[in-house]
Amino acid sequence: MRLTAREKVVDYVVLSLFALFAIVPLVGVIFSAVTPSSQNSGGFSLPTKIDLGNFGTAWSEGHFAGYMTSSLIVTLGVVVLTTVLAVLAGFAFARLDFFGSGILFFVMLAGLMLPAEAFIIPLYFNLRSVGLTDTYQSLILPQTAQSLAFAIFWMRNQFRSFPGEIIEAARIDGARDLRVLWQVIVPPSIAPIMTMCVLVAMWTWNEFLMPLVLITSEDRRTAPLGLAFFKGEHLTDYSLLSAAGIIVALPIVVLYFFLQKRFISGMLGGISAK
Amino acid sequence: MTMTARSSETVTTAARTAGAQRPARPGRRRRSKVAYLYVLPAFVVFAAFLGWPFLQTIQYSFYNWDGLSPATWAGFENYLSVFVDPELRGAFGHALVLMVFYAVVPILLALFLTALISRANALRGMGAYRTILFLPQVIASVVVATIWVSIYSQDGLLNETLRLLGLGDLARVWLGDYSFALPAIGFVGTWLNIGLCLVLFLSGVGNIQPELFEAARLDGAGAAREFFAITLPALRGQIAVALTLTVVSALKTFDLVYVTTGGGPGTSTTVPAFEAYNRAFNTGQVGSAAAVAVALTAVIMVVTALISRIQPKDVQ
Image 1: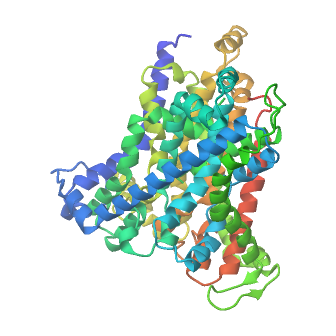
Image 2: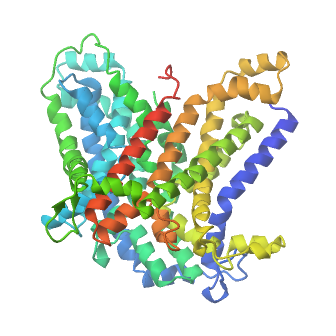
């Protein structure tokens, strides 16, 4: 269907206005981050002089090398663990028939609705009593549990739409379940598995409450937690705060620019997924 | 927040699909015992770190406990105080205000825009717009909070703009103002969610058959008529999704409040999630915190269930 010239103009104007609304605060941060601290009052202004030194100062003063490493370890841990567990469970829920599968699936799915506050209080006391607080495991395991609800739901939907004839053919050739899964189903499903991975990576990287409650020593702080502390120490140094904010957000934003279709379809798509 | 409510979007549909489990398919009748081995690892992690602690939260909520000394039985006292304690009532009230900013405003605005530019999805460059509109969703909420703290500061973007427009009298320290701090936080939610809703609705319109619009035009339907007769009904599914996502993110708000205002000034920006955290880990009211968390969970479940009723049944 063709768009008339007038329609196009209206469309572009409206979209540009709202894109501007979305982007102005972000552009402001970039400007602010390259403005020398002494000239920065927190407003929106084109920097007269570009000073990239703020990034270096924020990085070393804020100990972001350590925070970013922690975030990387935790994110990788959660993504790998979630993927393995969700592929296995998703396969069973989609392709195997067993007593109680409906109930089990529903219970784990309900996990999607739980706010973290609904389990983190006892979780903290439980982990403390076995000496696990303030460790990477104390972040990786609960965040894996939290990601599993979505991940299993996602994998089950993908595996259900997988052509049954191919699986039957492999079975007739004598392949057992595990071989069917790893050699027949998983390879062509890499794309949806990747989508799941980037979403889980984003949620884990951006998570704030878990590390806030479960991490006490400075060298295990994740990047968002580190930023919150950094903000407490540099309340009005907007240049440093902006630079630090960009450091924390950048890995996921870069990932987003490369894989934006996966992000958008994944976040909106749990619903419209086949 | 940016964590997008850890995808409660899927819940509405999912609850339905789970209920209407698989009609028996030929060839997969044999019951498998091995299946439990596939589900077991995931279930163990889920149960140990989420399921069981949730049940414990319910248990905690019936006790008075400061986290150190022995707990004492409290019955329904902690739940009662959710209704009578002005601080807790306030927190839930604030969540209601946030819902307006997070859900109602973005959805109505996005619907209006969708009516205006209903066919923009076919536009050249739409991909780039989509990327930008969606961008706020992927930024860590702590970073979003830091950004808006500077926008709302004394000489920040907002006051700067007001002064530029000759409205300097309205300038204030927004997050330190008893009446404006909560709307200021809410507006961040509007900023976060408007792009999400717009992208969602435009893609929904893209799925409507063009013949429907052409037929309506031939019948002489105006833009308004076209919107209410065709676009709006077709978007029911997307509206349900947008509502679930945004309402749940409003109810779950924590990071933004913690980083921007810490609940202040006074208690003017406290929210349930913040109260639960604060009571459990700062003020030694673990039982009360648990009750708040359970109440919040119940509200989220009820709201999600209500929203799923407007989801059209024939999808999927």
